[in-house]
Image (cartoon, rainbow, N blue to C red):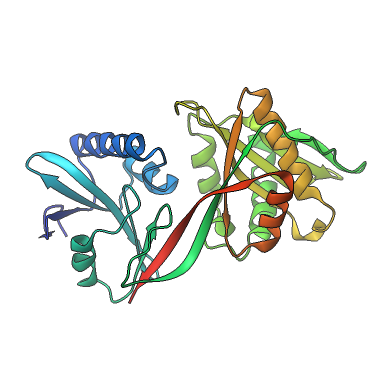
Length: 283
C-alpha cells in the first residue's frame, strides 16, 4: 500500500514518514508534551518516529498544519495510540474498517463509552531522598558492563517478566537499541549478583531535557529463583539513591495495576499514585 493510499475522515496513512513529516511529527509530540505536562506517546512508539522505523503512521492536518498523530501496529490485535493519549472517533471509525477488534491506549484515566478496559498502568512518583537498603552479605552490587552482561541480564530479565506482554521477550537487539540511546548511562544500570550471577537489577534513567529533570526507574527485575529475599527493595533503594546522587529530586515508574506485590513494595518505600493509563478494547 502506498503512503497516500488511504485518506478518510481527515486522517491520512503512511507506512513511513518523509524527513519533513518526521520533523513535523516530532514537533507535534513536543507541543503536546508541553501542553499536557506528560509524555505524548509511548517511548517505543516515539523511538519509531525518531529513528524512522517502518510502522503505521496516521496524520491529521488542518490546512497545512499537522494537528493530530497516531501510530498503530498489528500482531494478534490492532493496537493504537494517539499523541496526547485520547481517542479520536474519526480515526476509530477508519480503523474499524480494518479490524473488528482494536486495542487503544489512553492516558490520565480517559475511558471511552464504547470500549472496555482490559489493562491499567499506574504511574507512581516519589520524592527523594529515601532510606538506603543494603544487600545481604552474599549479594554484591555493580554496574552494567555491555560486553559482559548483555546475555546474562536478558536471561534474568526475561525470567522475571515471563508473563509480561512487553518486557518479557526482549532480544539482544532490543537491549542494544536502548543502550545506544543518547540518554543511556551505564552507571545508572545497577546489577545485584550472587556468585557472579545476576539475580536482580535496577536500570535508572534521568530525563535531562525535561524542565524538571526528573528520574525514572526504567526497568527493575528480580530473578524468580531468589524472590522472597527482599532483593527488589534493595535494588530499588540503590537505584533511587543513585538518582539522588545525580541531583534528581523526584522519580517516576510505571507498574501494572494488577501487580499487587510490586505495588505494595513501591507503596512501602513511599511511592504515591500520580495517574492511571488504560488499555481500551473496542470490539
